[in-house]
Image (cartoon, rainbow, N blue to C red; front, side, top):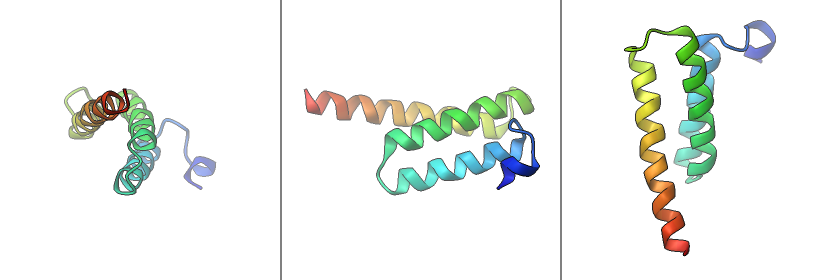
Length: 77
């Protein structure tokens, strides 16, 4: 709904994508969470200063999930 009112790179869109990522993470779907966190980070990088907490938070979430996904892939092999 926000996409109809706000530009696609608005910080509120990033917040919504981040929230969707959190939901997928709670639903034990790290791959989809990772995807939404990446989209949120891309928007935050366009809209916010480099040292903003939202950017740091998304970078941390992405790094954490990257490690988790690597472990899951290693367990499959």
